[in-house]
Image (cartoon, rainbow, N blue to C red):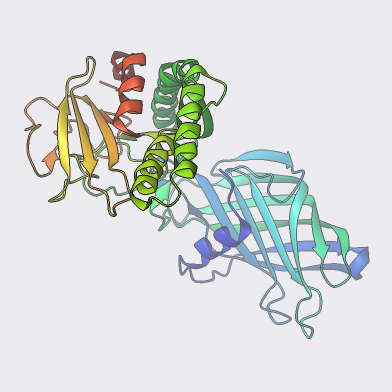
Length: 407
């Protein structure tokens, strides 16, 4: 996951920490802006993104220097919460990971607007000498690196060398809604995504579908306090595939031939509004068959939580081997030219005892505690016309998806 400097700065400031009297220093050198100085470094208390599991946590440190000169003088560090030496390089500002990060803001000329230097590390080292495990304990370390910045006013790239040390304490908390995955959770999530890849990718490609976008939860953060209660709950997508029909596949050629046929019919029926409307609607129906989406949600707290049938909608219970329950919803068109929105939902997990035919929410009976590394149920959504969804259903081994559930 890539995190922008603006996000981290905003996140840290929102924690409303008060400045401590902890001190360090920072030396900054850059010949292009005639900078060579060593000044005191005043650091905010450190906060961890997962204080409940310090061995897996990442620390955030925000420091200020020379505040009398400008309010923009700041230095940020992000590193694992343990005593160790870390060294990394970056090819560009966006070349970051979620464990190591540095950022420098320096006001080259506080009297002139727009002379703020923002630098990211090209090559950087942090050595954490002390990290007390107790809340309020001391953290000490040193850093050194070369940072790159772009001077907008002179259209010039510069290199800034920084080094120094920091001394602060730990708060033992972070007020974020999400946290990174712990090791046991990552194992479970990664295993599930592997099962999804094995289940879908090759069969869909053989059917003639091209994957235009793929997202999964391998690096997603997890909710700290999911509501309603459930075990693992990702803050991002667990699994999502956007697909388009390969025009060179057998199925794709059939669809393109049909599309051309109805297009020709529209041209031939000029002057006949009813015929044009009829053939145009057929064209839209064919077009809707060529782009679909398959997504998977983990630990759904309710049956049918995303799709409740309206007065003009209708639904159908399906019987698909390997699933605990399957349901298809047809949403009524919103206008005369529209086609029904069709979504097929397949449920996996121990839904025994739940009223699958209920017209309202049906709660899932979770047996594991909140934030425990378990995926108890899965819900697969196929957002596609029924004919396309039926073809997919026939070509997928749905029983395999039960291997993604942790007992």
